[in-house]
Length: 451
Image 1 (cartoon, rainbow, N blue to C red):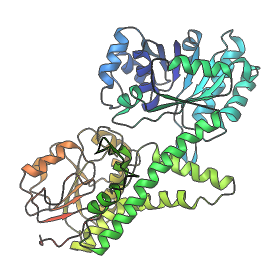
Image 2: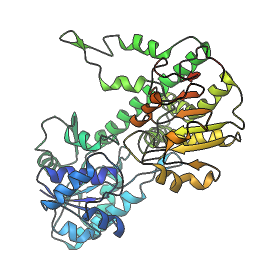
Image 3: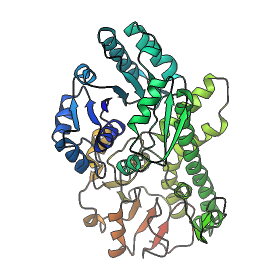
Image 4: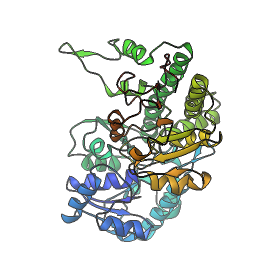
């Protein structure tokens, strides 16, 4: 098929590259000339595992290109996929980018014989596609909905494994308002052999939000329980979770072996979730509930617990070992998760804020996210020291905080940290795996030797 994709962010570019790798002809559109130029040179403007190699491949076989001209792209396409951002704005999602693109698509169809099918891939609240977007396109095109086709195809990509997730989906949701959109979606994803869920667009939109809200609830509930375990002392929450997850309802067996589904990883305590999806999606569903007269008690609690969790790092250190004032602290990891340079809503930023406000000296490191960190919030923390070689900083710092579980930080085991306090936010290590004077993590508070 011939496809236009509007947007070159994580969702837009990953979608374009992966669809073109299956033989579709794809043009990704962005108004940013520099981004378009970089993409056409096989240089992605963000880090994602496997993306540079796949991008180069699809450009060489001439199945993929990027452009700044929406009109030219639409002229040679059967379908346009809208994958622009829907950032959070006071709890609600900001639809300004989606609306703008919809207006341009409608204006294009007003004078063109190509009544292109429109598929929304941006994360939007239920009712956006079949009401807001439909009305905008109809108004600007002087057409009725059945003239152009309308659908919704939510994404379920995880940063750091987005290429794999797209190429190996567990399900694909086909949200459609007409047969044209349904047939387009079937043809788009014909190369994929997985469960195809056929629903209307409102249900498709809600599936995305329900999926992320339920996953986020697992994280926040485990984090809250782990804090209680920390206060009780001599309770190892890892053992608690192991006991819980041994329940066959969480961890069924196949041929007498535990399956260990990925959902179990969301029950491991940490310093909170971040990124571009969970925070804004949970807030958006809470805001929608409020508008509909529903007190979203549990959904609001998910956000409340998560917003406080990063600040618990310093709180637990001080409650257990005393004030960090004037201490020298090395924080390892700035991205919200490994294998990405994304620092949006990263818990590391809140941890740094709480340390900074207590007049401690802080040095930070990340394998690839340091540039984005400085660009986003570096001006807020002018006294922070950044380093490209964290191993050389071990001796000068008394406290080491592992905020992102990058594999390279496992090298701590090879270094002399015998007189260091280590707060392992992501349980990169087992308590007895690293020889330090004091080991601390969420849900683990045992007697330790003083520094």
